[in-house]
Length: 200
Image (cartoon, rainbow, N blue to C red):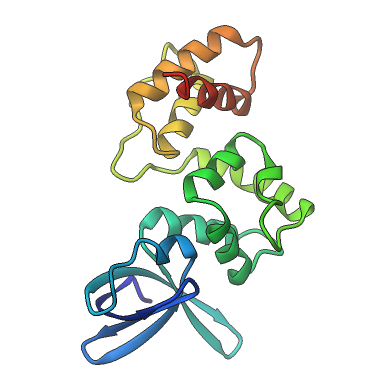
């Protein structure tokens, strides 16, 4: 229903922001990550929106970019994860860190966040890993051809691109890591590649 709100930022805290659009103030619940990227009150801002409808309650949620909104919506698809908890997860870790925890099968990164139990963290990783791997990175295109004919290598490269790395860096890391692993799973290859990138 609402794609975004663009206008003057009236006020903001780590939990919510108020945007004046043509004389109407809209209050949106936000993550601390979005809060830290907002301009000063009085300046113009564009906040992406998600309208959550529950019985007789309508609540707007705001996001500084599409990656955060997309992940919020994916989290809402998990049984036991409501908008309040999804926002807490986005406040607890950066989007890239959450995606990294999911695709590398590390639920322990998530249950460090207040309100996220071990079962919920495991469910998030189990149900979202493949969907995260298939996300189209913002501003990037997926490679059209197989990398040396390997679908696993393709998946790992695309996962790293989704996590924000350039294709050249991702490909270099995956090629080096694949040579050092014996019969790895995609998540093993991604995890090893992330370690390799830190040495570049």
